[in-house]
Length: 123
Image 1 (cartoon, rainbow, N blue to C red):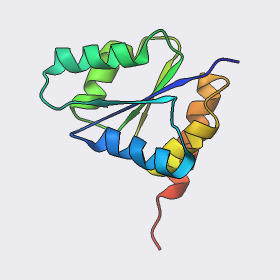
Image 2 (image 1 turned 60 degrees about the vertical axis):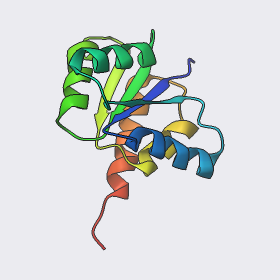
Image 3 (image 1 turned 90 degrees about the horizontal axis):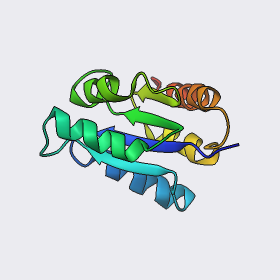
């Protein structure tokens, strides 16, 4: 089984802040890399994503289900056979990922998406 790289991409400092929170809760989050769209055009953001993903396998966690971060990931990474895109990243999703970052990329992507979905609710 191979370890899956997690790439958290977002606006401003959101990705780094989420990874910081994961680290404070779970310890080192070595499988997570932050990518920001700050001070870059689409081409630069695409390059940042490509570098962070590397050869894969990888799950790219995107802050919103539309916008520059998603469009850059879709344009550059959607056809990559071992990369999955998951939108609406939240802390529960990333915590699930750091404890289950090994295995089949499709299974892990489904697992973390479900964890993130369960964490959103109205009380």
